[in-house]
Image (cartoon, rainbow, N blue to C red; front, side, top):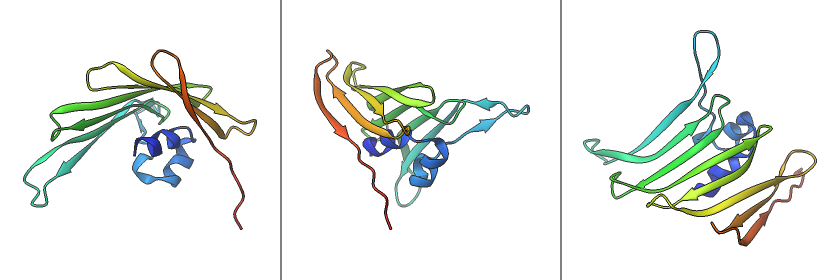
Length: 142
């Protein structure tokens, strides 16, 4: 699920919303129409609805981009991991994933083609060693 959220984060907010509504931009505005940072908290709930716990928290910036994801475990009592996204010129360029102890566990860097589409996602260890990369290819469908 994290990979889907992160790949979708590289898209424009409208495209992200169309591609996967769970990660749609959740923008709010004040009375003057200025964007505001917003947070969406997702809960898991027992079938009877009597017990619920935090599952995931997604934080959006004023432009509707995901700037932080937090995933919880142990029925919401423990942070499992958290990811922080950095943007340049409206594009996701870097993501740092932290483990449950707050230590960086991986760094992802994003590269785009001349059309602005995501081209590669590089996966680095926290000490800067390239572990792998994912390449994206696009083709038109009839």
